[in-house]
Length: 142
Image 1 (cartoon, helix red, strand yellow):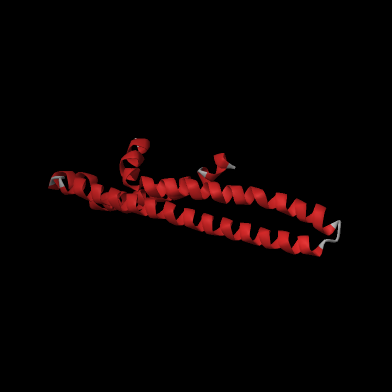
Image 2 (tube, one colour):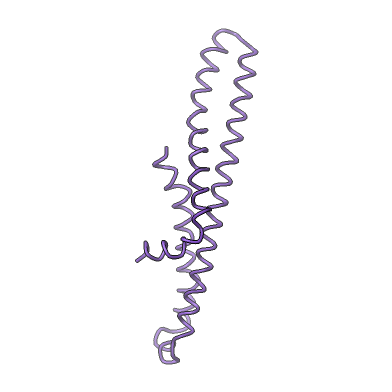
């Protein structure tokens, strides 16, 4: 049921989710490249005493770190944008559905329960989406 729900409400946000995948890939590549640069810095710069190589590699490491930071931040931004948009659409769908209930059905479910379903439960789904696109997407790439 959750997969169908997510597939339905995340469909309009495919571009943002594709951007998340690309940005996460860039971030992971940068993250995995930094230890290699650090090893080169120590092996070819520090042990040989080549100050120019140390500065060049250090600046390159700084540039790679900046790319990683920007890619990670943009990835989280696009993931949150997709999750919040899907949450907004879900709330609209729940509200539309509740508006079709009769007074007896509203009384049977109870107003507090319906309010909880339209706020807290959808917020939990939004959190699931954000965590999925930021952490769960990065793990297989890594």
